[in-house]
Image (cartoon, rainbow, N blue to C red):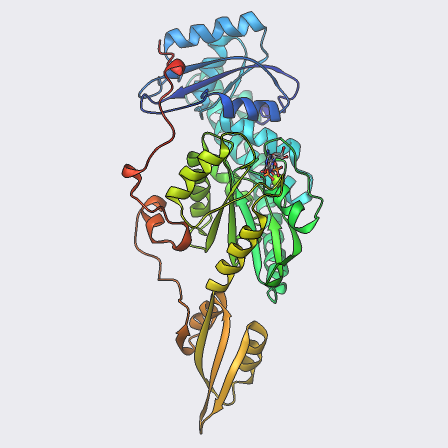
Length: 472
Ligand SMILES: Nc1nc2c(ncn2[C@@H]2O[C@H](COP(=O)(O)OP(=O)(O)OP(=O)(O)O)[C@@H](O)[C@H]2O)c(=O)[nH]1
Ligand SMILES: [Mg+2]
């Protein structure tokens, strides 16, 4: 499986970075900062990099001619083993660039998959990563096959090279099928596990990778989750009991971090891992105020939440790392835009009291009091109501019973789905999903995470960085 073998680990290799950015992209920092962090997390030694501003990529080599030759010189100068692109490349662009630079070329998706593969500890994470890697390789296998058969046999002719690749392709497809079946079993088991914990309210930490989710989890629950300065340190989900001051016990879970342009098939493969977040009563979106790209990171996280279908969930934005010099000002800018956010330092344990208050407040906003009319013989629903919430009062009439009950919003959703009649006495049920096209259009209608102004009016702390302009 030639192409699949390409996605082997780049650990301990010497690398040169490359990125194409659009002329309108604005940076306060070096545009190669994030990919440098990713490449280092994958274990490579970063020796240099090139950036090109261009409206659209060059069809054959992605970068323009002059920039490709600059890249080749850099590869020769540093005797680099690999060029890592911070963009996604087509299989033919990868091949052309490998020819031009005389070295291996990998793109952003392949690098992220590589990091996930080396950090995957649990069986579930390993299955998810293998599936995403094979799905990434499959179209490349196909195209490699076309390319090889043309080269060796002429168009449309069958030959031994093609036969081998055809066999490889079938093997990959078979394995993809098996992995999907295994993951769907894991997903079902997870759904049952999560449903079994329904007696507790659940709060889930989500956010950009390295934002400090695991550090916060450890501080709040003494969970002992790995929290290190490494991208994608966490790839599974841990759930612990957290005694929320002035509230009581809730379940808190920490999970895999997100990143800009997270490969779609990776998000899909991690659905089972993200089950807790999908079912949570409240999401705590942890953002890193020490990072100048915090606004972009916040939007990238909302993008992934949208992809998972959970962007309408009640969310509290937690602005972390306010202990870092310069972060307090950035926190202010974030709070201007997201007034219902809260600033903390998980590491220095700053702001945790008001954080806990905001969480309690958000959780109580997630409750409704309902008046439900049930058939007197419907003992099953009555028992369920007593378990799902608090029954405040019960009034028996000739043919029905009227129950007033307080419960988390998600339970009210279940009652509606089951066709029960009820009236909301206190609190609010979420509006039905609006018919909009993009998640950005949807943002202004979602509860506590709202920006206060239109994005065009926002004070944008991210300004253009002139020294990164490296046009041909
Ligand atoms: N200065 C400072 N550093 C922090 C704070 N919180 C976390 N960190 C550091 O940030 C790095 C990443 O922290 P983690 O808790 O592993 O981040 P994460 O969001 O779980 O990251 P992934 O699991 O990789 O997605 C670690 O080096 C932490 O020590 C904070 O409040 N202040
Ligand atoms: Mg983590």
